[in-house]
Structure formats: structure tokens, C-alpha cells
Length: 59
Image 1 (tube, rainbow, N blue to C red):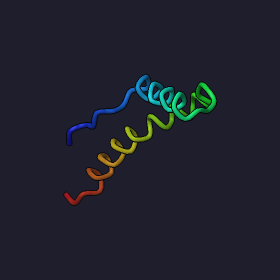
Image 2 (cartoon, rainbow, N blue to C red):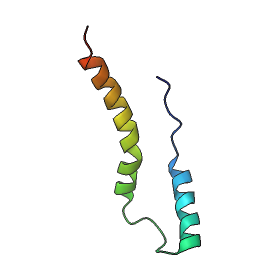
Image 3 (cartoon, rainbow, N blue to C red):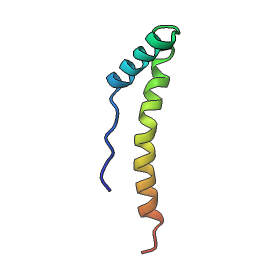
């Protein structure tokens, strides 16, 4: 399976800034660790699902 094209942290923060400029809100990121966790989750799911599929498939 071809790996998806992941959005980089810089792109996510640029989108966040654009949305703040348009709709308002507090500047900055409330929790850097939470942001990193959220960005890593899809990658973890992709690799875990691939591993799980391989390990559970009939041989």
C-alpha cells in the first residue's frame, strides 16, 4: 500500500493561523504535546493497521 501524503506541522499551524484571522480566537497552541500526539495518530493507525492485518491474516 502506498503511504499517504501527510500534512506537515508547519502547514497545520498555517491553516490554524488563517482560521484564527478569519474567525477569531486565541493565538498560539494551547498544548504542544497534544498537537504532536494528534499529528502522530494517523501515522500510528496506518502502521498498526498494516501490522495487524499482516499478523492476523491466514497463512
